[in-house]
Length: 429
Image (spheres, rainbow, N blue to C red):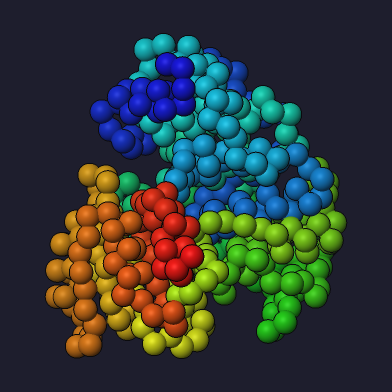
């Protein structure tokens, strides 16, 4: 196995299940690898807002001059997007020795694809002389592979219903799983304005230093700027984050709380905060692509994130026609997602996705038709996100809006398969 693709194919064959929650196997292999970080670790869990939180933490820390490492998942197009060192996506070849290291250490232990790749990326990060490591939890928290590393500061973003088959049926159960990343005596930042009681109880039970919005920190804002205040810190006249959407202030507020909690080990200046928020970048999160027609990319894939997307779309103003390219996993609450977007979308382009978990385009279309109240809306089905995108582009007027949303596979499929080429052709260049 010479290349990253060779190793990824190997990882896919190792375990009969894609998801097998539990830390015993991962902890055993991590112990054999002596996997540990010599720098502060910030671990981020939650249902929505994890990627944005990691991006803002990274951007501010980089502006403060710190050497950053970030692990996020899943990726949009290429696997190596999951790891950034000093703000740059790592090269595929840089990961290969660390896959070899995991293979040598695991011996007869069966690891899932996620567990194996997580250990490899964290091995690379631990060897990279970082000043701060930012780790996004993949699923849940308590039993996620990332949780084998003890955090120095935990951040729990907004919590809502997703992955109920693994995490439990309601916000309280899901919050309890997310709170598994908390550690005794370490800051526990909760961004969610209305956190489940289970998170607060878990923090108290483990003895974490709990930071709650409205009690330990808060933010205010008007149309031009916003301000944040927390324990012994205050920032006024802040520009809005570069990441779009009203929900980003909730995420940014948690970010500033985390950095305030770590200020003795990881000091950042007010200017680093201002510049870092202004330069934070995260593809696929209410990403508006320049050009005509207006193109919006968003990996909203559960009812909570779709509700935030709908609110953000409403705030964009009037468009004669909104066309949506949509593909999603079959285990999501598709009814709620389609119901929320129905008033906003005039023309649906449902797409199949290249994974067994995905709902078929035909089933998505049937579900939409069964509940839509729109007599003036229409739909088509497509075999790939690229095909759906071509159809939407081909029909659109320059003043229209095209929305690509749903699974990472949907947005990633459009980005991977030639978005710049499609736009250039549509614009006649």
